[in-house]
Amino acid sequence: MNWKFWKKEKPAQKKGFVREWVDAIVFAVIAATIIRLFLIEAYTIPTSSMEKSLLIGDFLFVSKVSYGPRIPNTPLAFPFAHHTMPGTRDMKSYLEWFKLPYMRLPGYTSIKNNDVVVFNYPMEGFRPVDKRENYIKRCVAIPGDVLEVKEGVLFINEEEAYQPEFGQTSYDVQTDGTGFNQLVLRKYDITEGGRVSNNGDFTLTMTKGAKENIAQLNNVKSVEPTIAEKGAYAEYIFPNSDAELISNKSQKFFWNVDNFGPITIPKKDVTVELTAENLPIYERLIVFYEHNDLKIEDGKIYINDLETTSYTFQMDYYFMMGDNRHNSADSRFWGFVPEDHIVGKAVFIWLSIDKDATKLFEKIRWKRIFNLID
Image (tube, rainbow, N blue to C red; front, side):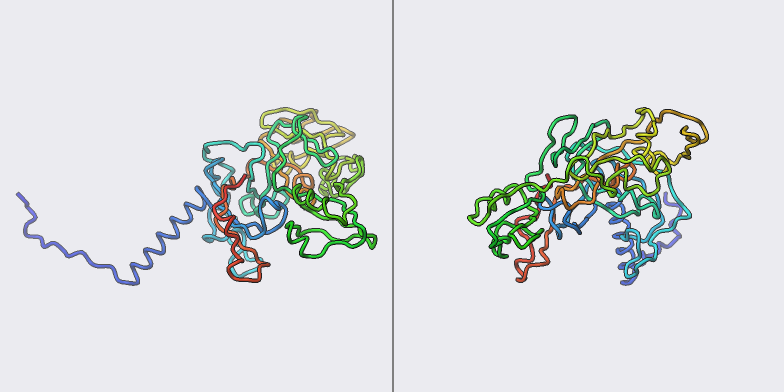
């Protein structure tokens, strides 16, 4: 028997129009935020460092679940904003008084050689890790690999590395003085470089296919790769580029973009011997990424006030390079990328816009839409 028969059922109150819209918007924001943080996120290509593999104006989906989504270091943040509030130049979009340590949920794979990876720019020390600028490069070396660039050719573990089909490099091109008009350059999709002398000398940045086509032109005398001389010192190349070095500043590495290394990529739980010669390579890693106190006194190395001659890495590290090898600020310039800076794996292009196209229909690069990223 229903002993509450004397109670009248209250009719369900219908939500008002405004309340329904507010609920729908709140649900959409929460759902989109969860998807963006833990599953997949959209990115755009802002620079030419990956040309012609990826083009300026390509819009990508980046998988967070591939390598495992990170738990945000700064969870209290304005939805869909990265580090700056929309419409402002320097107003932070996040609160720093509540922070979480680095944590990552399990992924279904690990970073492999030649994956195209989105990561936080490691040299941006004035922001929390998850709010540093997003970069996209190709991971050419993983933890434990030995990397070396010889005469512009990349070697991993003493074997010539994968060469991206549409990757670019710079070439010195000598002509009979007549040069190239824009129609020729556009025909072979050459968008970088130009004349360097009045004698018909050019430096052109192009793919191997474009280089072969240019070499066959009647007015071209020679086409040779632009290579920095081996042993030429470059102060902007890692580890010379690290202005915060406290170790021996007279210790120079005579490396450049075309002749770099050999260098071993740090691997978690692996111990390396520390010397005055190799300390500049590991100094930023020890102090900035793994938060130790480092000092040198009377030629001796002290970590957290203990004299030492070795160090055991606490994280895995990666070496990133752009496919546009002579126009890419990458690990050759600023060193290793720690695992806690990894955002996700670039999966496919969902839209591509050519800002230089003059006709409306041509602004969308239709052939690139839904292309998988290799």
